[in-house]
Image 1 (cartoon, rainbow over the protein chains, first blue to last red):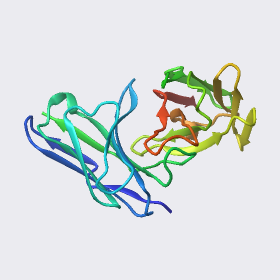
Image 2: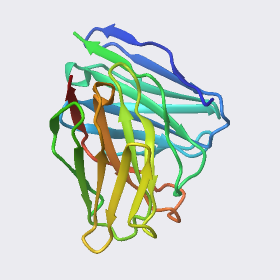
Image 3: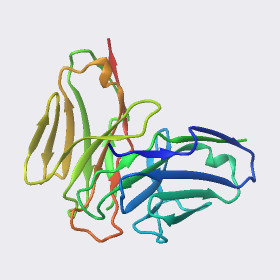
Image 4: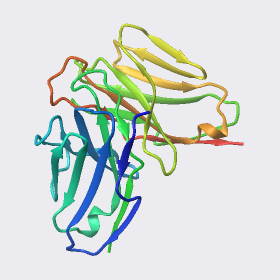
Length: 114
Length: 115
């Protein structure tokens, strides 16, 4: 079974803090993704990576950065957390790019910024 | 042109009824159309998917209907059960796209099946 794990299920941070969300997949997938999920807005892509040290902006990259130093690990960084970044964050991975690939999602991290 | 429009946003169906969720797309390069199911507290998971060379695909109580000319596809859940209560996302992607092509998700439908 493919497993995508996220470092925390729930996280509470203060405004201005630097926040790290970690994601690890165990299936040697090429591609990894970070989404945020908000009611009524669905899944919005923040960043994705199709190879180690490669990253591509998604639809809402502002206020976020990412790091992929190893194939299995993809980190999302909030440089200076703000209250409008309170959300559910989902990590996903997939084998192929640009094809009929299945995305495997982690359980999500619910981040609250106060 | 990259959007996938999903409706309704929420749906309530009696147990045993048919649940229908609709999606529409514009980009004719899309040729893979999956549906993802998400239970509370979990990440989405692939439920069923279709390619445009067929007009319908059925897996158990779940059926995707695909209308290529109208650029629409829908998910039908027959004999809906309370355990089907979840959020459903339609999506679209291009099988032979570029390396950095990505899957496009609809905004989701919250389905509640009344017991």
